[in-house]
Image (cartoon, rainbow, N blue to C red):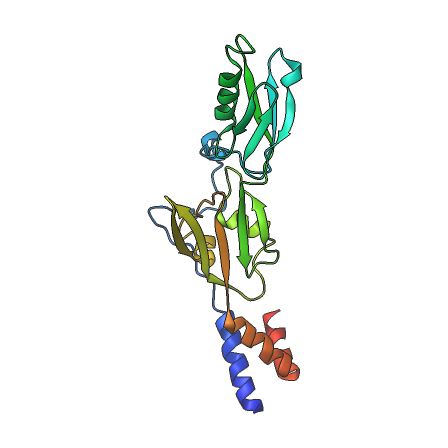
Length: 235
């Protein structure tokens, strides 16, 4: 039994100690052989614009120029609607701040305000979130920004857990009312093998479980005397 445990431990440790693969140049990746990377320019530091959409329970600020009675902070209700004096109820769900401002101006124009000028700002968004589940340290809901990517989402969730499987990360997304899924390899992204994919609101990220890591943990817990010298080698 002791010999069997020893053989299993050695096999698992050697698997975990495999050398790290160097980044390989490709059409999407330039590997710099020098000690320093060139600095990014201004365009590299700005993400492509994504429309920020208003959703249920978001908080918005509505300013009507020259009409202080209509200027106020509002919370979108659970059905995605807002209510304002002289304007009534409007469906704000799925609208940008500019589109909602145009709707308010249209409701006011000609009846109550001659030339209304309205601005809308999203103060706090709780609807633009990504769900992170599976083998991460802190599963939960995280806000989505213009520059949100898979690696940033994992970092927001405090990283991968002890039993995470790097090559089994799924992004679930609804596109054109169709459920779609993409399989990603975090280890390959870290090596620069392919681009860190963008994450959008309502995406669901699920990090898979590694049975091998659980077996290693269980074997080590059952054979502490045998495992100690092997773990020492790794340190």
